[in-house]
Length: 112
Image (cartoon, rainbow, N blue to C red; front, side):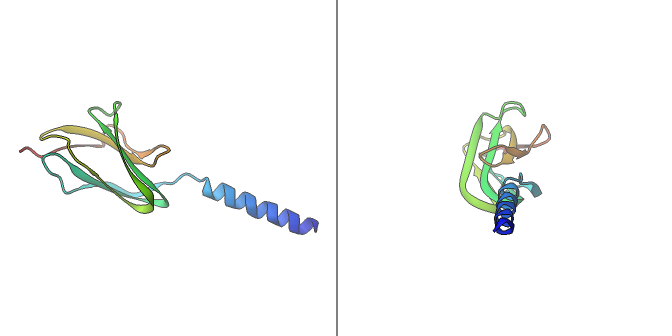
């Protein structure tokens, strides 16, 4: 009985700790389909999560968020309504935290 209890406890601890491991971006992020007021941002993670892009006018001012619900490892988020010829900084991640993004993560929307 003691052996079974130890086995169950160890299995539970393994399950809890592996599901709590943070996910990692394994591909991207990369930009697709730019327009004069938007763009699509894609990335891949090693663990399925929801998809969140935080963006704004400066790398330290990501005041806007677009969230796509549902867990996936292949993330695709479309930003729209940005305006033509805008300089936009962004990060990608999940609803808990950004996973990738610094001052080099930026793009310009196309001119009209």
